[in-house]
Length: 510
Image (cartoon, rainbow, N blue to C red; front, side):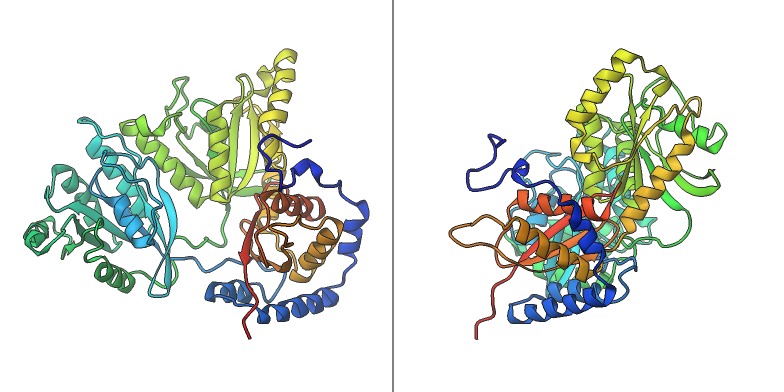
């Protein structure tokens, strides 16, 4: 069946054949030595193509022990914070050299923290554009400070942007008090300094106590190059905060919309009233780290405040809680998304699952309040799962009652399965053997009269499993999903998202 939104020159997912049951057997029968020989031969073929510096980073990271958990170098993180309408997003666009961040002359357009990959003088780093508060007379100071606190917590260095024409406001000073207490480098940026005459206004910002203000015009680009040169002198080569922690109990974020039973789940797991439980939605404000032993294994659980339907309109403590939820997810390895089976699966539930997928964390779905489920609701729930959760059908499902502790022990095998998949690494030779079988079984459709070829594939990293395909042309999204589906069918990957990226490369001119 071809969906209406599938272009005529692309292939619908349903058009791909079912799995050849002998394929898994053929792949598993390849010896490690044969796989290594195949990988070396295909890798040598890439030398005929124009490769970039980042390509070699990826290829170098894939050599060595195929069972080793591999991370790509963690790029240093630079966060941009400041009150609404000081030009943070304009500065992001200027640094990126392209229009990515939404820029409007309206305070608070940026709703959430958004991460971009940036580069300056051949150094790459992650750039975090912050937003997420709704400016109002009551909550703005607290909200701006909360946003800044989360951004600083997850960054190696911070750009604090102030409108030089307006000068330091009470809101700016509110954030500065928090910044002064951090050990992170903070660079003060005096924006909207369009010419020399305005530099006096920038100099007045020395009074904030954050050191020398860097006068720039994000709109016109004035002073941004000097600012970035200084940023590179402050940022580490490898992030101190973005790299994964190794060792210790595995880290589990319990997330879900308000009042689905997250705190009850943690309390029952801990065997004590560790977190306040109240029928009032949104009782929990901050994530609470708790080392918990379940079925003989210790885990570090983080109970997070529920994510509100409209984060941008939440004020004060609720707003702060939603930010901390995002921060907890970034620090976790696996997320347990708690769903209330007595209520229909909501858009809010789906958005929370999407946050997990975007974060690249392993995923377990916990269907809570199972003891309250009647036959009629059970039938409706199965249909909702089939329709709304088909895109995460690979996630382990656990039916529990957090209040009574029913089936809580089933969480452990689900978490272990998801994390094992998250850590999994496929030998490069076996991955390329699979790609060869798939392209022979179902070649990519022609694009503009040419057929894109996959030259070489490799798993660039695990946590989550991230695969990179070096190709001669763009692969349709449907074809990449076909490859992802076969990866799951052959190698499992139950409980983890899989990323398949492309690097289109041309043959080197002789």
